[in-house]
Image (cartoon, rainbow, N blue to C red):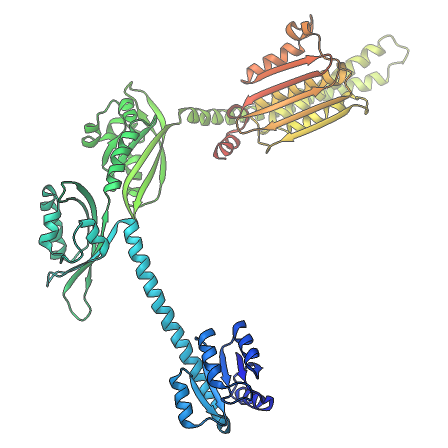
Length: 599
């Protein structure tokens, strides 16, 4: 605890501090003995208590009390004096002092300090609570005004009704007008009075809450839409039934819903609007045209039985029965029959419109996913093909490759016994070389057949320079832009062949000093570029190719095979650039493509 002490005698200040600490009141005491120092410390603040002598040579305690009340009125102020009389002490209390203690009775200082701090804390809490209450009332009134939500209370037995200011504004009544049930029903639209009366009668008879919407017909002939929510609450000390609740002006929302329905009809996607119980309220034009059903048919017939695939109907009914009572978005894919009689896969996304914790509407949008389902089917077929490739690889390894290995070993032994001068020696060596090459290629083929993924394309193409034994003087740069994604095996294979052909041409024929390989993973496509600063390709060769050479033509054919776009530009001054671009939905495996679409 920090204490500011106005005292000109240091010894007296030490005695006071010792008395407090003896009573286990730890304190940090700052002493001032004149007005300037006292005022300086006072303005600095941070004190929990002020002690003051009544009489000082150049200052006095009553003046200090006035200063303290001006600068820090919330800090308790206690006189500790040896010259202060009883009458003066009482006058000091009237002027605002918290307490007084005579220096001859310092045993009272600790209880006095504790009481002063306790009263100060209680006073602060009361002031804080009062300020919080006033602030909350102001916030509530402003929140009601901004949200167009008023509150009400209704004592059923006495008929007494209480309205907040915003409720008066909603009903457009004078604040001095006492609200009654007769007044309320006068304001309700004539067509809605009987339904509202039935709801109110049921609520009072069963002492249950209510939540309904109705219209108000105002004096000027305009119409307002309101939502009324009420809950029963027992009055304190009595069993009389009382309802408390809220009235919300939802006119703008109703108009917005009408406009939304008009806009929904313009959306080029199927949209269905349900009420909280799952009954159809509205269906947009696209959905009506696709299924061939009218809006009345959507509202009256078993739509699930009419347009959902027979194998999916029970799943759809069960999902709706489980999800509609809740308020969590959900989705489901199902087959929907078009007016042409063909079933197509659609992804239905259901999103709730929640107001005050309650679902008011369900909005379901349907997106055709026929192509995605076809892709999933393609993946399943790819898995079947992979299993078959693995089986073939096993068969090749256990039969043909083992036979070649045995024959190669026997031929190698036989060749060793042939004289180096024999005319058949070179022929046998060539045959052995071809067999070893066949074994190597067979192993590579088996490895490729057994692979369920694709190697790193950048790493594979980066090794071309080393494989060709190119002079180290050529500056070979490799760049990867974007986040690498797994490629579909056919795409990887064709890209590798195209990239390898371009790099081989650059290293072996362009006389370039610099070769660049770049792979860019973009959101929309995958791009591969090979550039060199060599002497370029002859324009005629670039257009038509060279007789007996199929490199450029093969690159173009491979690009077209995987749905890519190949562009080759070349000049003697700038060198050659080969650029391949493949759409993301073709290049990337399904998980990678879906991930990029989410981003």
